[in-house]
Length: 42
Image (cartoon, rainbow, N blue to C red):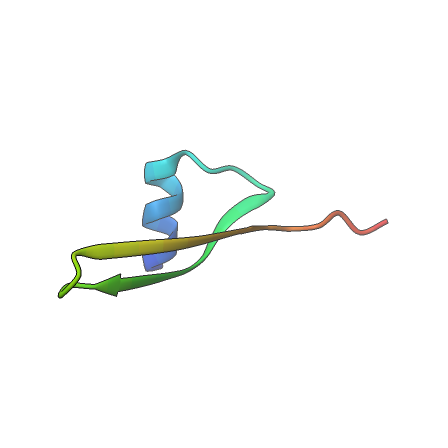
């Protein structure tokens, strides 16, 4: 399991949504999650 998949499960995200990347700053006690979605291609 990738690290992003853990956050997707914790947030209950389903396709088309997914966690694109994460950034953690221990000094500032901050966790940023960047979400994105798959666009439907016709």
